[in-house]
Amino acid sequence: MASRQEEKERRKQERLEREKAEAAAAQRKRLLQIGAGVAIAAAIVVGIIVLTSGGKDDKPKPGQNPTAAVPIPDRKITDLEDAAKAANCQLTNPPIEGSNHVTTKVKYKTNPPTSGDHVPPQEVASDGNYTESVAPEPERYVHSLEHGRIVIHYKPTLPKRQVGQLLTLFGENSDTDFGLASVGGGFTLLLKNNTQMPDDVAATAWGHLLTCKTMNDKTFDAIRAFRQRYVLQAPEKVTEPE
Image 1 (cartoon, one colour):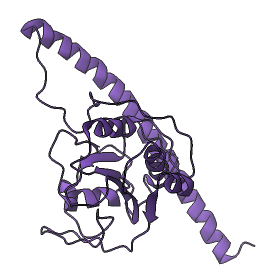
Image 2 (tube, one colour; image 1 turned 180 degrees about the vertical axis):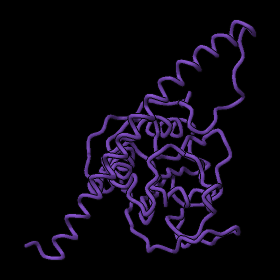
Image 3 (tube, one colour; image 1 turned 60 degrees about the vertical axis):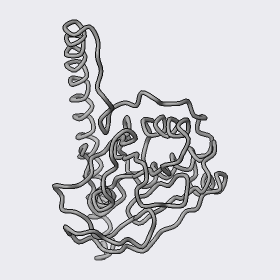
Image 4 (cartoon, helix red, strand yellow; image 1 turned 120 degrees about the horizontal axis):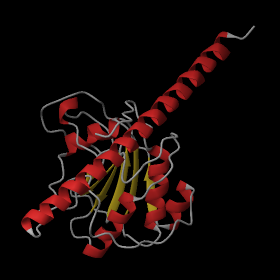
């Protein structure tokens, strides 16, 4: 007869497998919806071009495919610790600072923040590319971290070409240790840092931090490995787009 501990572990594994299966089904549904949406959007755009003889949005909205992407090196190092070391980046696991819902400003102990009190659910920051939009407030993207998101920060003074490289990285499709692929920037936010961080680039997850003082060609593998390991590895796993 299985011991109580063995039975508990069996139920845990069954629950994890069930979560992954449900997440995979949701992802398939999302991809089908995206495909249909793209077809409709393309038809609308063609119609607008015919009627107006040109024109475009003033600037992209969060989540749109970036238009200023710049090629980046192919992935060479897959292990997170090895990739971080090669890029001269630092990996830390700051203590969890709390998770209450608040409507006031929060003073976080890490920069950029990796956990702590944050806004209510209806104000959570959406997934997407914010390079040409105003970055959401920290209290909003900290809630995103609790939902299993990865936030990629870059210093406001980072050269335009390197921002374009981060756009390319943001939009890459990648597998994750959770088992649900990140497609076209899924489960990720890319933004100009608004906490005065000292580093060129950083990536955050709930309770985890990657900081890179100087961005270089090896930084991309460090961020890739960070995203692969920590996507949806958070207290509240939201597997649908936000």
